Amino acid sequence: RHMKLMRLLVGSLGVRQATSFLRHTQGIGAATAGSRAASRWSSSNMGAGVLGAATLSSPETKSRYCTDHPENNVPPHIAELVGRDLHLIENHPIYIIRQKIQDYFESLDTDYKIFNGEDPIVTKTQCFDDLLIPPDHPGRQPSDTYYIDDKTLLRTHTSAHQSEHLRQGYEAFLCTGDVYRRDEIDRSHFPAFHQMEGVKLFPKDMEGGGVVPREEWVESEACKMIGEDLKQTLDGLVDVLFPGCERKWSEDYFPFTEPSFECEVLYEGEWLEILGCGVIHTDVLKNVGMEDRHGWAFGLGLERLAMVLFKIPDIRLFWSTDERFTKQFKNGDTTTVFKPYSKYPPCYKDIAFWVPENYEENDFFELARGIAGDLVEQIECIDEFTNPKTGKSSKCYRTTYRSMERSLTDDEINALQNKLRDDAAEILKVEVR
Image (tube, rainbow, N blue to C red; front, side, top):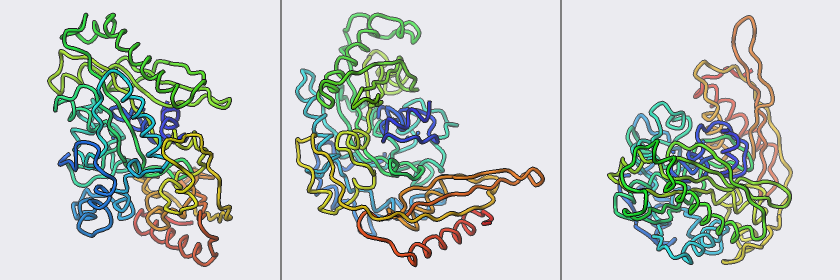
């Protein structure tokens, strides 16, 4: 299930995440799936220039994310991504997909409030507790999540703002933003990505509504009606994004919706999971003082859709400022097919080591990203075994280095690999073989 849900995010095969919404959008609640406030910058429609200027580059703003708190695990290369706000940059593929979806919802009878600029720092309560994510959930671990301190973190899904908006009185809204997850490294995973979630509540006086015991509500005709409204709404969205394509619905499980569903689209001969959704769990609404209300929510990952529709082969490209990439796309046009502009050769390097008892694979991936940045295209475990006599376990990882802009030299790659070996031994306490 976890591998399936991760594909919803960016089309990957990751297995570290434990619930769908927590990475699915990489969307509703904990994502509407794929593996998570203090103040806010704005309520809605804040300009990209304003957000970028408010959050990028300066030591003062970086210190918001990289602090001396003992539980802070946000590295500088992640802090530098905060505020890029790709979803607000005109002619960017992420912006184009977001606007396409937003235009569809603005064409409907329901008036959806648009939120595009919330502060990415949220509380544990917003990210987990309000959405019924249990305290022992693996998604809360620092191996998966970037913590600012013991109470706040970089949001792992835009659903972290759902309860906040409901408490503020918004009954129909779309929420889009950048989210952050420590993760494996390959061409479809990146520690920062973009999600959109949507929420719609139904009137207090709806037939069969009001305060209803959970078990009774899930089986009620009113609950089924909301589920059908949800599917009908999202079928319309699928028609906009994938015109003429067959789709299918299936039941799923998310902790914050009940019942829950996923939607797949038959696109170019392959079934693609594109979003997760469901009827909002009665306890989620109870947490915000709305136990007499009912509604639905959905979530999706913008990178996932953009990679499919524009045929972009590497998720790192979204963060490129190279005009050979950025000038290929225009607002409103989702028919553009990305034209590769470089075919620089990869460089492969292996490292093998004995792992300590408390070893976390994501820590090794994060270490590599911090050293080599976007030059790391992929890291895969190519061999592992346990010594039957000592009980010690060994892993061998192959790192693929490749630049999208130039050829890499042996000297620079050897320097990066040597530092990775040294730092893995010193910081992660592995025994390099």
